[in-house]
Length: 279
Length: 178
Image (cartoon, rainbow over the protein chains, first blue to last red):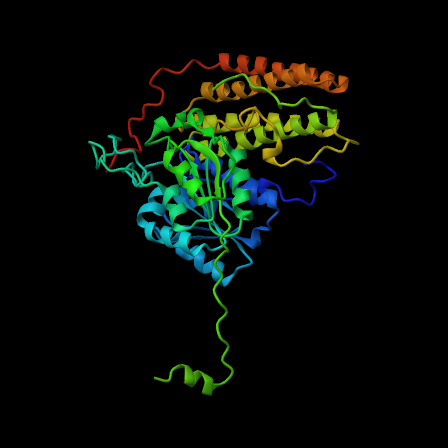
């Protein structure tokens, strides 16, 4: 940031691509885009050493807007793609991005098993409790009494999915919640998530100002968690089960080793290969 | 959106540190106005896009001023979250959720004015809490500068009528299921 120190450093805006986001003005995802660029700049990760992987949805457009490698994949399959990439190219910084519908409904099974496998990557979920791209249907994290969804006029009547509790129970190694209205705080947490070994989940409360305009008020409701991040899963579980979903900060830091596939046995000649297939 | 803001919890101890804060504040303002201009262009609201672009250019001139004042000084290098802004965001950054695709020039100026007023409050807080004479002098100069911006924006805003209550009503809303 100074003449003497900043010249060689990559600034946050240098991570943005030339494509301009088509999100609705006011959307929280703009803040998250800024936070990702600040985190990458904070770590000085070269764009060619990072990959952003996504599924489908408004927030899944994220790879298009960044100058890193990217893959805008199939609905709900961001984590499967990202895990494959991390296994094949462990030296890359792999970040999966998406929304609550893509991650917890269509991709729910991948979510559970990615937490369980614990690959060394970061998953940023922009949670707005609605399917925005398809015009406002209830998602897995929608409150049961939300009556404005056109397919669920009386509300879903179903308890919302609790992503952080499920992540903890399934084995995620780093769990945090932030708000898109705190772009700098979110950047710091994303940086910590990238640094932490294993699978890191960052839930960002990111308002959908078009279908959930009342979420603009989230910025006045979120509050920093009063306790430091715990390394004890039991304590984290108690905390996550009793919070109101509006506490922000790093809520759990585990110490499980990250998943790395075992190296394949090398086969030196045809006879050994033939032996592999012997019945 | 509140116009009040406090500065860092501890006092700013050197002009170099104050210049670093000032540079970050103006840089975030330029980035925010350019982002808002891009958003408005994407949504075909060209009048407001032009206005945001002009505001970004004006803030860019302030960056030049800060850079001139920084010649020969070594500013501390801080990451975005290491600045102790009140609420985490710089006075002229953030508040992106206040944008709307149907917003009018009056709203754009209102949004900019909130940022400038928060900047005034920030530099006033710095002047009131620092014990370094150089910092106090510079902070008071910056207060004066930001107050001039507020006055200028107020004049600009008078050129535009206050929008009707239903300014955001869209007769062909994108939210309707087809």
